[in-house]
Length: 80
Image (cartoon, rainbow, N blue to C red; front, side, top):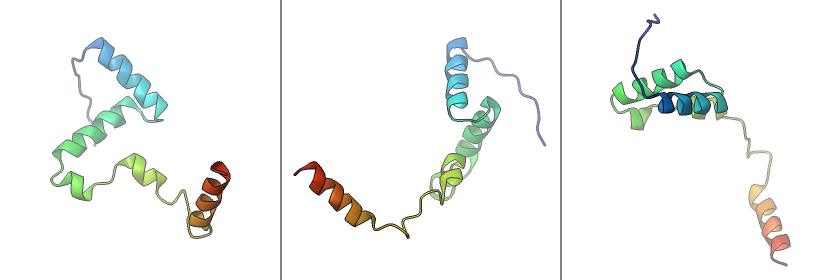
């Protein structure tokens, strides 16, 4: 259940937070909610994955790529 909350925060901080939220495609409310959740959850550093990291999980697949060979080729080309 969502509840409305009124906060008194410095205007400059609000503007920076809005900019950060916009650049990260998240609402300011969700950003604050995630922060409050992270500081109030026990052992959050050990067990909680941030929503951003969770959304990126599985985006890159290394199974189909021989990344070590490609990186070696890149370095050889760069330093030859």
